[in-house]
Length: 162
Image (cartoon, rainbow, N blue to C red; front, side, top):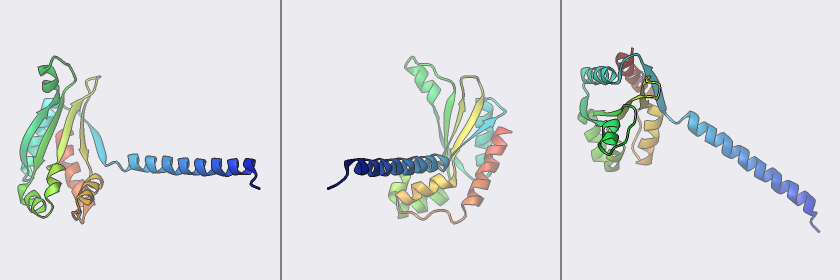
């Protein structure tokens, strides 16, 4: 005959172990989420202009700006400044899209320049770790040198924010 008390303890321990594994996995996911947010010492407009200039100097094309605050204002809502700059390099992206067409839902890359409630300006962007997740989602090979890609993007962000 099964001792119900022992069975309850075994079930509790199994549940506790499963919860511990879940919390560890959740912590790892947020730690490797791949989103970087850095402060800017400039206004939103100046940061955007500097970011755009730094990207163009490095051969990128600016596809568009998505001004979320202006969109909110157009429907009678108010929010702090928040603009997404969409940029890319068709010489790189086109070849990847031809091999893996669904990658186009994830790219081109973006950078968000935003202002918090206290008026502080920030820039947020994805790292190579996150781009690797996106690549794998579509069966595409990842950048063989993610540290180099991150360093190049960090230099662009430095030019925009310092």
